[in-house]
Length: 332
Image (cartoon, rainbow, N blue to C red; front, side):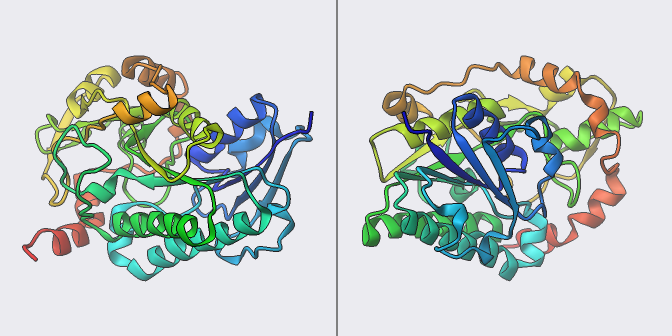
Protein backbone atom coordinates (compact mmCIF):
# COMPACT_ATOMS: atom_id res chain seq x y z
CA UNK A 1 0.00 0.00 0.00
CA UNK A 2 1.38 3.39 -0.96
CA UNK A 3 2.07 5.77 1.91
CA UNK A 4 -0.16 8.82 1.77
CA UNK A 5 1.45 12.26 1.82
CA UNK A 6 0.04 15.46 3.31
CA UNK A 7 1.29 19.04 3.31
CA UNK A 8 0.42 21.16 6.34
CA UNK A 9 1.05 24.88 5.94
CA UNK A 10 1.45 26.61 9.28
CA UNK A 11 2.27 23.17 10.67
CA UNK A 12 4.46 24.54 13.46
CA UNK A 13 1.62 26.69 14.74
CA UNK A 14 -1.07 25.98 17.30
CA UNK A 15 -3.66 24.03 15.31
CA UNK A 16 -1.30 23.02 12.52
CA UNK A 17 1.06 21.18 14.86
CA UNK A 18 -1.82 19.13 16.23
CA UNK A 19 -2.79 18.34 12.65
CA UNK A 20 0.75 17.02 12.14
CA UNK A 21 0.42 14.88 15.27
CA UNK A 22 -2.77 13.30 13.99
CA UNK A 23 -1.51 12.68 10.47
CA UNK A 24 1.68 10.99 11.69
CA UNK A 25 -0.38 8.86 14.07
CA UNK A 26 -2.50 7.79 11.10
CA UNK A 27 0.53 6.73 9.07
CA UNK A 28 0.91 9.71 6.74
CA UNK A 29 4.14 11.14 5.42
CA UNK A 30 3.91 14.80 6.43
CA UNK A 31 5.54 17.92 5.01
CA UNK A 32 5.37 21.18 6.90
CA UNK A 33 5.81 24.71 5.58
CA UNK A 34 5.90 27.42 8.24
CA UNK A 35 7.56 30.84 8.40
CA UNK A 36 7.74 30.58 12.23
CA UNK A 37 6.31 34.09 12.44
CA UNK A 38 3.48 32.77 14.61
CA UNK A 39 4.53 29.16 15.17
CA UNK A 40 7.45 27.48 16.89
CA UNK A 41 9.55 24.62 15.59
CA UNK A 42 9.54 23.28 19.16
CA UNK A 43 5.85 22.44 18.61
CA UNK A 44 7.14 19.62 16.41
CA UNK A 45 9.94 18.56 18.77
CA UNK A 46 8.30 15.30 19.76
CA UNK A 47 8.68 14.18 16.13
CA UNK A 48 12.32 15.23 15.67
CA UNK A 49 13.43 11.68 14.89
CA UNK A 50 10.43 10.89 12.72
CA UNK A 51 11.61 10.07 9.19
CA UNK A 52 8.12 10.64 7.80
CA UNK A 53 8.19 14.33 8.79
CA UNK A 54 9.99 17.06 6.84
CA UNK A 55 10.05 20.79 7.62
CA UNK A 56 10.75 23.86 5.50
CA UNK A 57 10.91 27.35 6.94
CA UNK A 58 8.94 29.19 4.28
CA UNK A 59 6.50 32.06 4.02
CA UNK A 60 3.76 30.48 1.92
CA UNK A 61 3.67 33.57 -0.28
CA UNK A 62 7.10 32.53 -1.57
CA UNK A 63 5.96 29.05 -2.62
CA UNK A 64 5.89 28.18 -6.30
CA UNK A 65 3.71 25.49 -7.90
CA UNK A 66 6.80 23.57 -8.98
CA UNK A 67 8.31 23.45 -5.48
CA UNK A 68 9.08 19.92 -4.34
CA UNK A 69 7.10 20.41 -1.15
CA UNK A 70 3.90 20.03 -3.21
CA UNK A 71 5.00 17.05 -5.32
CA UNK A 72 2.80 14.02 -4.77
CA UNK A 73 0.78 15.61 -1.97
CA UNK A 74 -2.51 13.78 -1.54
CA UNK A 75 -3.97 16.26 0.94
CA UNK A 76 -3.11 19.91 1.55
CA UNK A 77 -4.18 21.43 4.87
CA UNK A 78 -3.83 25.20 4.79
CA UNK A 79 -3.43 26.78 8.25
CA UNK A 80 -0.71 29.33 7.44
CA UNK A 81 -1.62 32.98 7.83
CA UNK A 82 -1.64 35.73 10.40
CA UNK A 83 -4.25 36.22 13.09
CA UNK A 84 -5.23 38.67 15.83
CA UNK A 85 -7.70 41.51 15.51
CA UNK A 86 -5.78 44.60 16.60
CA UNK A 87 -2.77 44.08 14.30
CA UNK A 88 -5.16 43.53 11.39
CA UNK A 89 -6.69 46.95 12.05
CA UNK A 90 -3.23 48.51 12.14
CA UNK A 91 -1.75 46.57 9.19
CA UNK A 92 -4.66 45.64 6.89
CA UNK A 93 -2.54 45.36 3.73
CA UNK A 94 -0.24 42.79 5.35
CA UNK A 95 -3.24 40.71 6.42
CA UNK A 96 -4.69 40.80 2.93
CA UNK A 97 -1.34 39.75 1.49
CA UNK A 98 -0.67 36.91 3.92
CA UNK A 99 -4.17 35.52 4.18
CA UNK A 100 -5.29 35.95 0.57
CA UNK A 101 -2.16 35.88 -1.57
CA UNK A 102 -0.67 33.22 0.68
CA UNK A 103 -3.76 31.10 0.16
CA UNK A 104 -3.57 31.57 -3.60
CA UNK A 105 0.07 30.42 -3.63
CA UNK A 106 -0.86 27.22 -1.80
CA UNK A 107 -3.89 26.66 -4.04
CA UNK A 108 -1.64 26.86 -7.09
CA UNK A 109 0.77 24.37 -5.59
CA UNK A 110 -2.07 21.98 -4.74
CA UNK A 111 -3.42 22.33 -8.27
CA UNK A 112 -0.03 21.58 -9.83
CA UNK A 113 0.36 18.54 -7.57
CA UNK A 114 -3.06 17.17 -8.48
CA UNK A 115 -3.98 17.04 -4.79
CA UNK A 116 -6.95 14.87 -3.91
CA UNK A 117 -8.21 17.44 -1.42
CA UNK A 118 -7.41 20.95 -0.24
CA UNK A 119 -8.84 21.80 3.19
CA UNK A 120 -8.91 25.47 4.17
CA UNK A 121 -8.75 26.77 7.72
CA UNK A 122 -11.46 29.44 7.69
CA UNK A 123 -12.66 31.59 10.56
CA UNK A 124 -16.05 32.04 12.20
CA UNK A 125 -15.17 35.74 12.37
CA UNK A 126 -16.61 35.99 8.85
CA UNK A 127 -20.07 36.00 10.46
CA UNK A 128 -19.41 39.12 12.52
CA UNK A 129 -22.07 39.84 15.15
CA UNK A 130 -24.05 36.75 14.27
CA UNK A 131 -27.33 35.31 15.38
CA UNK A 132 -26.94 32.11 17.36
CA UNK A 133 -26.64 29.23 16.98
CA UNK A 134 -24.87 30.17 13.76
CA UNK A 135 -25.35 28.04 10.65
CA UNK A 136 -23.11 27.98 7.60
CA UNK A 137 -25.70 29.90 5.55
CA UNK A 138 -25.66 32.86 7.96
CA UNK A 139 -24.97 36.21 6.31
CA UNK A 140 -21.31 37.18 6.01
CA UNK A 141 -20.42 40.42 7.81
CA UNK A 142 -16.83 40.52 9.15
CA UNK A 143 -16.14 43.27 11.67
CA UNK A 144 -12.40 43.70 11.12
CA UNK A 145 -9.70 43.18 8.46
CA UNK A 146 -8.66 39.82 9.92
CA UNK A 147 -12.15 38.40 9.47
CA UNK A 148 -12.39 39.89 6.00
CA UNK A 149 -9.02 38.50 4.90
CA UNK A 150 -9.90 34.99 6.05
CA UNK A 151 -13.22 35.10 4.24
CA UNK A 152 -11.62 36.40 1.05
CA UNK A 153 -9.14 33.53 1.28
CA UNK A 154 -12.11 31.17 1.49
CA UNK A 155 -13.64 32.81 -1.58
CA UNK A 156 -10.41 32.13 -3.46
CA UNK A 157 -10.53 28.49 -2.40
CA UNK A 158 -13.98 28.00 -3.90
CA UNK A 159 -13.05 29.98 -6.99
CA UNK A 160 -10.21 27.51 -7.60
CA UNK A 161 -12.76 24.72 -7.33
CA UNK A 162 -15.11 26.34 -9.83
CA UNK A 163 -12.49 27.35 -12.41
CA UNK A 164 -9.79 24.68 -11.98
CA UNK A 165 -11.88 21.82 -10.53
CA UNK A 166 -9.62 21.59 -7.50
CA UNK A 167 -11.35 19.44 -4.84
CA UNK A 168 -11.69 21.68 -1.80
CA UNK A 169 -13.50 21.92 1.52
CA UNK A 170 -13.47 24.69 4.12
CA UNK A 171 -13.87 24.59 7.89
CA UNK A 172 -14.89 27.69 9.81
CA UNK A 173 -13.27 27.36 13.22
CA UNK A 174 -14.93 28.93 16.23
CA UNK A 175 -12.92 29.26 19.48
CA UNK A 176 -10.14 26.68 19.41
CA UNK A 177 -8.07 26.19 22.57
CA UNK A 178 -5.59 23.68 23.92
CA UNK A 179 -1.86 22.97 24.29
CA UNK A 180 0.50 25.16 22.24
CA UNK A 181 -1.97 28.00 21.92
CA UNK A 182 0.14 31.03 21.09
CA UNK A 183 1.46 33.03 24.04
CA UNK A 184 3.61 35.71 22.40
CA UNK A 185 2.95 38.78 20.30
CA UNK A 186 -0.17 40.90 20.36
CA UNK A 187 -2.77 40.84 23.10
CA UNK A 188 -5.13 38.06 22.16
CA UNK A 189 -6.02 34.52 23.25
CA UNK A 190 -7.72 34.52 26.63
CA UNK A 191 -6.04 31.32 27.83
CA UNK A 192 -2.50 32.68 27.46
CA UNK A 193 -3.51 35.93 29.15
CA UNK A 194 -5.21 34.23 32.10
CA UNK A 195 -2.57 31.52 32.64
CA UNK A 196 0.24 34.07 32.83
CA UNK A 197 -1.80 36.21 35.22
CA UNK A 198 -2.39 33.22 37.48
CA UNK A 199 1.31 32.33 37.49
CA UNK A 200 2.15 35.94 38.38
CA UNK A 201 -0.48 36.09 41.13
CA UNK A 202 -2.34 38.87 39.32
CA UNK A 203 -6.11 39.19 38.81
CA UNK A 204 -7.70 37.97 35.59
CA UNK A 205 -8.63 40.82 33.24
CA UNK A 206 -12.22 39.97 32.35
CA UNK A 207 -13.89 41.96 29.58
CA UNK A 208 -17.30 43.39 30.47
CA UNK A 209 -19.04 41.38 33.17
CA UNK A 210 -17.72 37.99 32.07
CA UNK A 211 -21.13 36.63 31.09
CA UNK A 212 -20.21 36.64 27.39
CA UNK A 213 -19.90 33.12 26.03
CA UNK A 214 -17.57 31.51 23.53
CA UNK A 215 -17.87 28.20 21.69
CA UNK A 216 -14.58 26.77 22.94
CA UNK A 217 -13.41 23.64 21.11
CA UNK A 218 -10.40 21.55 22.11
CA UNK A 219 -7.71 21.51 19.45
CA UNK A 220 -7.54 17.74 18.92
CA UNK A 221 -11.22 17.81 18.02
CA UNK A 222 -10.42 20.49 15.44
CA UNK A 223 -7.70 18.34 13.86
CA UNK A 224 -10.07 15.37 13.67
CA UNK A 225 -12.59 17.49 11.77
CA UNK A 226 -9.96 18.53 9.23
CA UNK A 227 -8.89 14.97 8.54
CA UNK A 228 -12.51 13.93 8.02
CA UNK A 229 -12.95 16.88 5.65
CA UNK A 230 -10.00 15.60 3.61
CA UNK A 231 -10.99 11.94 3.54
CA UNK A 232 -14.63 12.46 2.60
CA UNK A 233 -15.68 12.14 -1.02
CA UNK A 234 -17.61 15.40 -0.68
CA UNK A 235 -16.10 18.59 -2.13
CA UNK A 236 -17.13 22.21 -2.24
CA UNK A 237 -18.44 22.12 1.33
CA UNK A 238 -18.27 24.59 4.21
CA UNK A 239 -18.59 23.30 7.76
CA UNK A 240 -18.68 25.04 11.11
CA UNK A 241 -16.50 23.50 13.80
CA UNK A 242 -17.23 24.31 17.41
CA UNK A 243 -18.33 22.48 20.51
CA UNK A 244 -21.92 23.63 20.04
CA UNK A 245 -21.92 24.33 23.79
CA UNK A 246 -20.86 27.91 24.60
CA UNK A 247 -19.06 28.57 27.89
CA UNK A 248 -18.89 31.88 29.72
CA UNK A 249 -15.65 33.66 30.51
CA UNK A 250 -16.77 33.55 34.15
CA UNK A 251 -16.87 29.75 33.92
CA UNK A 252 -13.30 29.73 32.60
CA UNK A 253 -12.22 31.93 35.52
CA UNK A 254 -13.96 29.54 37.91
CA UNK A 255 -12.09 26.55 36.47
CA UNK A 256 -8.69 28.29 36.64
CA UNK A 257 -9.33 29.94 40.00
CA UNK A 258 -8.30 33.44 41.04
CA UNK A 259 -9.36 37.06 41.57
CA UNK A 260 -10.86 39.18 38.79
CA UNK A 261 -10.63 42.76 37.57
CA UNK A 262 -13.12 43.95 34.96
CA UNK A 263 -12.17 45.99 31.89
CA UNK A 264 -14.38 47.74 29.29
CA UNK A 265 -16.30 45.70 26.76
CA UNK A 266 -14.93 46.09 23.23
CA UNK A 267 -16.94 47.15 20.17
CA UNK A 268 -17.47 44.63 17.38
CA UNK A 269 -17.24 41.62 19.71
CA UNK A 270 -20.22 39.27 19.94
CA UNK A 271 -21.82 38.51 23.29
CA UNK A 272 -22.02 34.89 22.21
CA UNK A 273 -20.33 32.64 19.67
CA UNK A 274 -22.18 29.41 19.11
CA UNK A 275 -21.62 27.08 16.19
CA UNK A 276 -24.49 25.11 14.79
CA UNK A 277 -22.60 21.87 14.11
CA UNK A 278 -25.50 19.91 12.73
CA UNK A 279 -24.15 19.93 9.18
CA UNK A 280 -20.70 18.50 9.93
CA UNK A 281 -22.23 15.94 12.29
CA UNK A 282 -24.61 14.77 9.57
CA UNK A 283 -22.10 14.89 6.71
CA UNK A 284 -18.94 13.56 8.37
CA UNK A 285 -20.09 11.90 11.57
CA UNK A 286 -17.89 14.33 13.48
CA UNK A 287 -18.62 15.47 17.00
CA UNK A 288 -16.49 16.99 19.77
CA UNK A 289 -15.25 14.55 22.38
CA UNK A 290 -13.27 16.66 24.91
CA UNK A 291 -15.54 18.43 27.46
CA UNK A 292 -14.59 21.99 28.35
CA UNK A 293 -13.70 21.30 31.98
CA UNK A 294 -11.44 18.40 30.97
CA UNK A 295 -9.76 20.48 28.29
CA UNK A 296 -8.98 23.29 30.73
CA UNK A 297 -7.72 20.74 33.27
CA UNK A 298 -5.34 19.28 30.68
CA UNK A 299 -3.96 22.73 29.94
CA UNK A 300 -3.60 23.57 33.63
CA UNK A 301 -1.35 20.54 34.08
CA UNK A 302 1.17 22.33 31.83
CA UNK A 303 0.59 25.86 33.08
CA UNK A 304 4.34 26.39 33.61
CA UNK A 305 4.68 26.57 29.81
CA UNK A 306 3.10 30.02 30.06
CA UNK A 307 5.75 31.28 32.50
CA UNK A 308 7.44 33.37 29.78
CA UNK A 309 4.22 34.67 28.22
CA UNK A 310 3.53 38.44 28.28
CA UNK A 311 1.88 39.70 31.46
CA UNK A 312 -1.13 41.88 30.70
CA UNK A 313 -2.91 44.30 33.04
CA UNK A 314 -5.74 46.79 32.46
CA UNK A 315 -3.34 49.58 31.53
CA UNK A 316 -1.29 47.60 29.00
CA UNK A 317 -4.46 46.10 27.50
CA UNK A 318 -6.00 49.57 27.14
CA UNK A 319 -2.90 50.74 25.28
CA UNK A 320 -2.72 47.63 23.08
CA UNK A 321 -6.40 47.84 22.07
CA UNK A 322 -6.59 51.60 21.50
CA UNK A 323 -6.96 51.23 17.75
CA UNK A 324 -9.71 48.66 18.27
CA UNK A 325 -11.84 51.28 20.02
CA UNK A 326 -10.76 53.99 17.58
CA UNK A 327 -11.89 52.21 14.43
CA UNK A 328 -14.57 49.76 15.55
CA UNK A 329 -16.18 51.91 18.21
CA UNK A 330 -18.10 54.17 15.87
CA UNK A 331 -20.93 53.86 13.41
CA UNK A 332 -20.05 53.37 9.72
